[in-house]
Image (cartoon, rainbow, N blue to C red; front, side, top):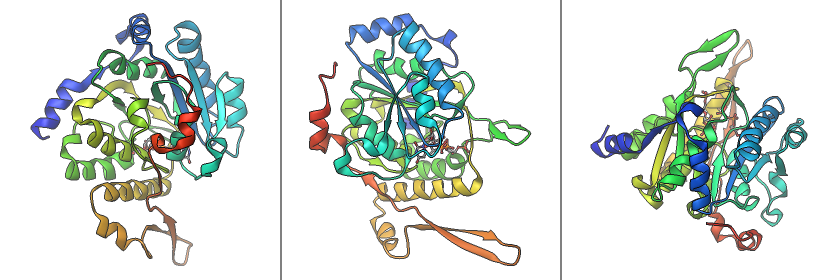
Length: 330
Ligand SMILES: O=c1ccn([C@@H]2O[C@H](COP(=O)(O)OP(=O)(O)O)[C@@H](O)[C@H]2O)c(=O)[nH]1
Ligand SMILES: O=C(O)[C@@H](COP(=O)(O)O)O[C@H]1O[C@H](CO)[C@@H](O)[C@H](O)[C@H]1O
């Protein structure tokens, strides 16, 4: 690791692997001193099996018992199941991604749901959590908020964790984070070695100040995490970024083929940021596609998926957004 990345890793990595490592009451005092308002956002597509328990736990701990959180929003991202109903029944606010800023249409993807969440929330601090998390993750919220509440120069905090992979019949220790290990980490290390200290650059749990999140684009699909990391590095510098060790992260995982498509979106996003305009422009025609192959018993059958970058502009550049914002404290 380069000296700057190592220095950042040593200085900006904190640890909150469980509630025992945190003092929620002290964080609540810091929140009140800073006159902060906190929004927790869960982007969710077809997460009826997990979103209800997650919302119940988070609401019980951080809305009702210790009011660190002022707003708990599930963004329903084109779900075809009962995600919205389950989330609402558990006490979350729920909005359909397609219903936010309708004048700007709707696009598929996690990043779209996250971009829209900026226009559907009012907190000056935002916490993003995946809606397919398994196990007790209530400490993730104070863990992610702590650097933002105690370090004014920190604007964006990524969670990091070990990632066992749930497979039929058991768990592969540290088997998770496949796109991270096989795609994002090598590319980031090669192109932005100052980011090499991030343990989980693609992790779906992170928190940030609205004042910076509204100044960067949001890649509409699965490239959103790597896009935010690279764009926020450029905006606030390494000193404005932090990470917190949240212990273990378990989630419902996807097939290798689905992760291949996710990797394609991550690669497209990296190339779009790495000034590889020529490579990206080469993909304008037949490119921008990821071709994968399935064998039908007789032959390989190719099938291609669009992975070209599609993104939204900084929310701060959207006129309607400012009209939507109520007085955001802090
Ligand atoms: O179009 C999408 C795809 C995913 N997600 C959500 O984004 C999070 C991470 O997505 P996923 O679980 O598919 O990715 P993985 O964690 O398996 O890498 C989950 O809460 C999904 O419900 C979403 O809101 N819209
Ligand atoms: O980190 C990764 O390699 C991928 C896939 O994780 P798994 O191999 O399914 O544990 O998961 C992350 O990547 C996505 C793209 O950035 C994020 O949107 C997900 O929240 C995150 O789980």
